[in-house]
Image (cartoon, rainbow, N blue to C red; front, top):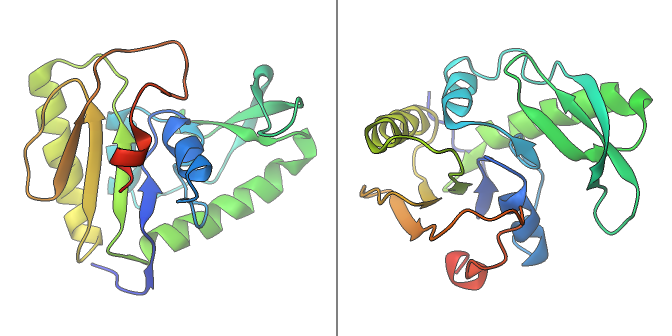
Length: 190
């Protein structure tokens, strides 16, 4: 069933934390959504959407990570994960906050499902075969069309993907800097 309640411009569909990070940096992340600051492969994103987020917010602490700091801080964060093996970072500084994070995920899911005319963004960092890439993105778009009346999706990837709802941005190289500063985020987010 397609929803039509609230409006937001840009919404991360994950892959890693770079999209949500850049949305904040450029003042485009107006609210939090369920795929912000998480590592989620494309097949798991499809699975989560097909299962209507069933048990998505049931998370548990995975580990403390000194590499995943709370932004604008030097404080380490806990990595939490769910049954889909989606891993969330940059959100928790205390193990005890996992229940609150779960409740926040529920709010983010509702907010996501109530979007009107969103522009989704995903950076594809998996090394997929081209045929798998195309098949999965076609499936993703079909699923999004069943949820949303109207949307666009920006796909940043090494494979070109042509579709009326897609703006494709070439991912020239994979880098170790997870923020992908070399991309022209100003142009991507215009």
